[in-house]
Image (cartoon, rainbow, N blue to C red):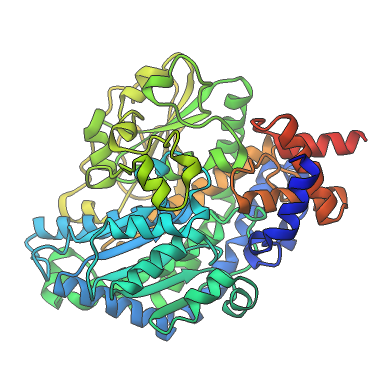
Length: 578
């Protein structure tokens, strides 16, 4: 089949994956000239990106005060009290969010127990799982095309062994991800209490996307519409959409914790009960502080420093401990968003190009680093060729993708990462936070790193500027973000602040390096149907062509150089020359 026939088939037959009508896929009017803004001033570009996060704050009161919020919080409390399984399911960015939410819930109940507060059920801390499409290997790099298969989501849900009255929370930024929808259908059929969280208008999804309509109209599912608007970077749902989901589900988790604990428990843990409006107020405080001159100046300095490192062909390494999973998620999300080299496994060290950035656990190595980051052993997919054939993906049976636990451990997240890349790293950024839940219980304990004394190490500190600092955090060249981060059982606003900051840094750095046009991420790699559609729309928007002719340009380029990481950008450059 020639490229014209392939393009015509996609345009005519894959209408359920043509998503330009979705709010999350639209171009935000505030950032239409984002590339030009960064050309003029890094600080102005940072401000423009941060301005879009205000959309989350505007939507927050109605969402947090909704009946659905209370229903989710009550379901979480009920599951904790009765020892039921709690499962979060997502794909890509929401898959990483699912694993993060799991770790936040588990860590709180484990740390509360060390302070003498028994969980409501002996297994509360361990009866929780975050499932990412493709297994934990997809935390490192998404499994190509897996999101297109509902049966893959169903199979991963089957492997959890869920039972009646377990709690299942499916999260999809667009509300249309096939694998996540499949996972929710399986949970419904197993008698679970099921929630479906997404960021597009419910009526629009019901009207236009059949697979979404089938799940949303199922009366056994509680649907939660968290629409905030378009993304700061068009279609980059790792930004505002996933941030809104972290806030909403995280606040429901905190509400469940507060409703489960007694007044004496709260006193022992140094916690104060929150009212519904407190989460929105805390969000506004963080967002206001982020847009202050002090924070924008620091963020612009980081962006310009990182861009200069990458432009020299060198690397940045982030060092963290308690919040490594948050940092790691941003590092790995940069690969599909901007088509930069992915993390390398130990077996690839001598062949593949180096990633631009890595993240590692301060003070730990090997499997210990993985277990500390996740709070458990990694979970891979042990699927055989027969599994793929049974799930309707026979094309993967010949050479099944390596997604098992052994493959996961082949990607280092401990201090051996620095050993491997020592000759290529120009900058180590040590991420530190203050006022997190553990510090209220046990003091500011931290793991030391043998690399912190290296000349290229800078500290990035989150928190109150008056808080007690470690000697390195207090160094004159430290990057400090004076943010009001309220204490909470699951460190919700610490996690949210790190996400907002790192999303801004990574996006701004790529903009500074010319890897976006307008507010489109033109380095996108079309590895699944959703990304093929997005690539076509980018070409159509920037070149002024209609959808069908833009599709033909894309499929012609795929036929000529299918593996080119800059395929869409190459098409645009050629169109400009023509």
